[in-house]
Length: 193
Image (cartoon, rainbow, N blue to C red; front, side, top):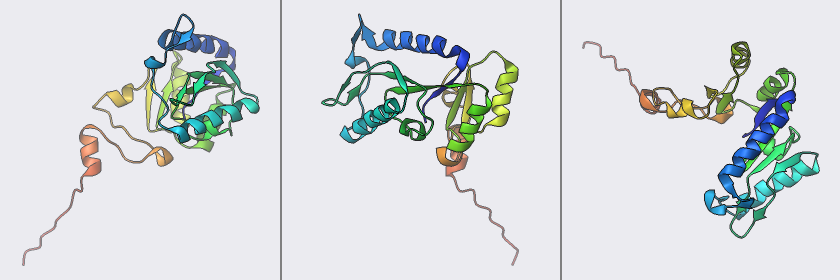
């Protein structure tokens, strides 16, 4: 599942920053630039992602960025969607599309409860200067990997193992960990005859 949790008091600040980032990356003078992003892989997945969006909006979520879609070339403009229902399709399944759900919480228990209910994520990115908060998140959740105050670095750092937990994947890959995971170390005992 691909989404962002944000404290309720900081939601609008985060949404404004995301909106600005999407504008700089994918729009020029207010016009969406298709050549700056990839497409949805095929018609079935285009319909799936589009269906997720329609379901979430019909159930009260708010789209604050994006809106255009072109079925002819499977393009969906980047979407920021705020507070979709937690049982909506885009919250249950991996999106594999240009949609970012932003969910507000207050208190942290709401996030921890959802991680417990929805399974352990492959990756978790925690942004905070409050070490007590970071420690609380790490102690109360489980995930394949974690990067603090950045994204993807737990994967990019070749000396760290990479892999999931339970439904997000099993095993550890990269470096010596991948070799060990994919090898069959065999014990052989020979008794003297």
